[in-house]
Length: 484
Image 1: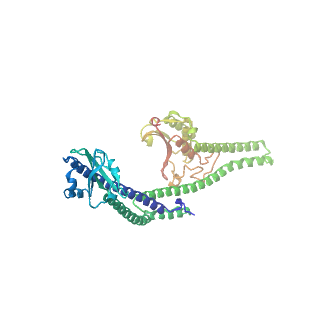
Image 2: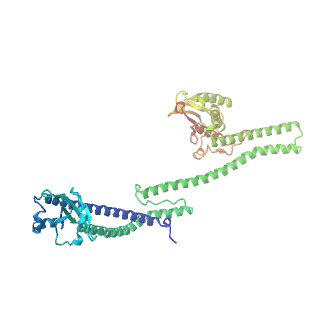
């Protein structure tokens, strides 16, 4: 059974393709060279025939020139053009005289009938030999001294032999060259494809699960193999990161589900416990029932708020832009309202309204945003400042423009956060102070996650600048109105 070409190795296919192209190139070059040599020889013979025919046609005589019987006078000229054949024809086309080289016999000469077909305009034509063993080139001219025609013919045997020798030489040398270059190509391809085999081994190791493997530097970066190695290493790095991200995402998802279960379980247990006490008759007094209903309402409210926050985060993850109703506004409005909200929450807390970084007065910060959503962001930032700083801790609200962005800052002088806490403060269900007693409506760890998600839906972000013992500054940064 024949092996299909697709089953051959890359080296064999490249070698066959190269050998085929080389063979075609050598054949084409040989054909062109032999054709040009043949044309050159024909042109040379034609030029000599025209010259001799012109001379003989103008010889003054009343009949065929007397020199026809003097081969000793014309023999040098005959030898000069390769042993020609001279024939004189009368007005009726009959042969009335001629001259040929002593080396030629009658059978190898063109026949009289073929000689009569030669046009008298002097254009050379090709004639066959009488015995069909060779070719002749003939040219005819009308004579001026008598009413007749002189035909000059030369054999092409020598030209044909030269062309045949050239073709044979080209064939033999081309075959030897093809074999030599094929052998050299085999070893060159073996060496050139060696890096690809190393890449193949690396790919096999990666397929077995070793994602840390990389393709070694096998060639200069500017070469094809170098480009391939660089591209593969880039792809492998992305794959490794993708697998690592997937693993981390799965871990986060497990943690998220665990946190959600915990957060939902706490209010549900409170509601369930109150209802069980009522069902068991442990609330004989009206005041006990009212207290139980109050706890149920408090836990239901907490459960509702948690559910709404989770639903909002899910919507922001799926289609953040669809949750926004954008209109032109200025962050100074939110900053001023936030100052009043802070004073209402904690009248003992000093609140200062400044420009960004506490320099100068509040500045304009025009944006194209959803005001309700941004109010939720600012409310979450204010709630974070009041929840995680001692009562009476000063808070600064800064608003203005910084580096081409509209900025609203909520900065406190509280205890601040350590670096490992600051890195995770925007994670869902993450609380830096796990020991804090959670009263009614306590934060479940979603406020900052929601704030960042809403800010990013607007094309901005919420940033944190903090250090342990130096307070914390949460910064809402959004694109300016004229940049959207």
